[in-house]
Length: 349
Image (cartoon, rainbow, N blue to C red; front, top):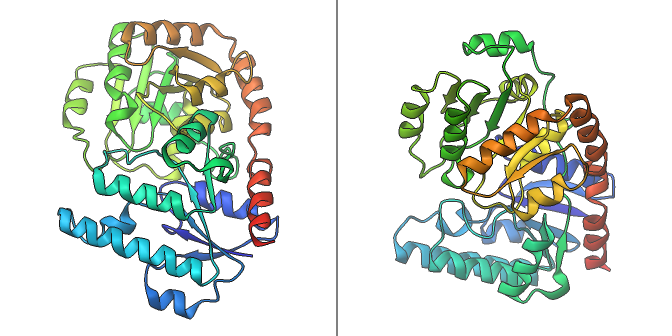
């Protein structure tokens, strides 16, 4: 069975590549990127084929930001879905986010509803998100919760910790927490920096990643320059730098204000580092998997974040690494995709 993806494989996140690689072991073959044109539908045999949408917003936003352009984009997208279904394709949507990180308007919400209506299968990464999807779109048993896989084969080995920290002017004798990936408001970067300030040299903090489309990183960078133990790198980091920073750290600091799934949290397991995270359902499930995976704190509370960091750093690091390795086995992609593979096969029967 062929499976096509929208968008194509992302260069900034190995998620799709790992997902499709594991699905191939169950008889699925990745066919490439969906092209949102009638000519693409006409040129393909879409019988026994899956059209899989991940982050779908650009499918209707591409015409421009004006309301008229958005509505035209939505109509065209809905027509594409209907024509694809008539040509024999099944539609799948992985709901990575209930709405776009930088916000959604009425047209976006109409588009989400139309995509949900057209989808034969909607995948998400937590029970709570699955329940919200079912409530919003009346999807019933078309919603499937799949564990988010780890990144075991995605990153190179970290380079020497001394070199990584030394290049940033940081000490190797002070615990270092990291927050890696795109810089966005919902990730609570201000909370992370405030906690680092309050701990006054007892931890070091590395925040690294390109700024999201509507995130102004300048105030964060200016604040960080006044905190001797904090570093903010507001630019894209490649796989090697991601691995270097993760490997040099004591754990990942994730003070998110909202979350539906977190690749960073699964990356922490991959590197055996554990997390200090907001007490939100996705993180709560992960931390509850083993005693030493990490600690939780009340979202938006700097004081509670500081206390959670202190609790985390009191955990025996060898136990943290052992529990991360143990739990990561349950989050291997080959295991995670099994219920998805079974459901996709049932769609063609």
